[in-house]
Image (cartoon, rainbow, N blue to C red; front, side, top):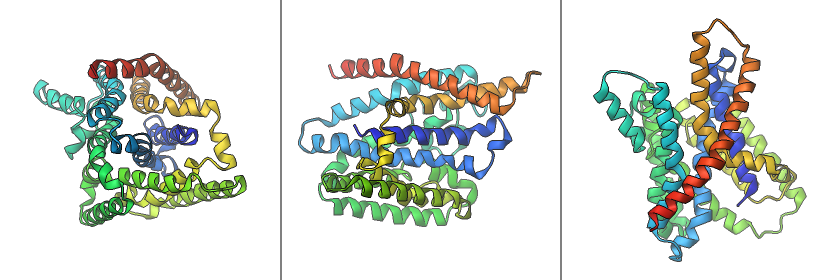
Length: 346
């Protein structure tokens, strides 16, 4: 496990949290917070890196079968997804309500993580809307074992990336503004290059990990990667949003990820703090839980005469979400992961 990357998961999960706090107060309805959707792009790139880090060699050397890999990934994403989906459905977190048949179609699409293939917001954002990204992850996991033979030669994987990236850039350019979210933000096929970027970064990491990089050099690299990311982030409003959904952030995310994967600098040592690592470990629970907590509070606040200032309510809600995430991770996510792998591997 690379502790620094686990801690970065927490940081980018917090950015997604900040991006959704506008449902509580308009103070968060500004670029600095709303651009936090870049956290999802980071998770996709990180997923490609970590999956390659953990499984590429094992699959290529037949130490693990495709079936075992897929079971491990199913056990990772589905239990908590289904739990939060049922909770969101019980809370009424659904975009439209036009009869049981329509509700059932949307629910089934969310249940099977196929809703993001349908370019309609009432599908990909219905129920627990952050789960759309799991549709992408599921697609990545399905494809990964078939990419392993290609990845044996990084040039072949690079060619796949370049072709897909060019096609996507052309498609983005010609897509009407009203359609970009459905076709380029949530669509698993459109987000596939993000995952390949992560796989390519693992190839680079594999070549750099044994290089003699001093702590001083590592610290400079880490600081430069943070600075580059902040420049891209703070000036992103000048760039059309369709590109910011993925390709605009490939370079700064890649530099950030490879810099901290080497764990050579002083910032890496700070990120290796056990509390931050635990925060990264619960980030999946945090990601899936946070929005329906915020929305539930926002709905309660609308119907209540008792008003709490956002600078009080949001820290309280954050603490509640962290507590729920800890409980979820240790008492549901981990036990269910183990139980499902045991059941399906019989």
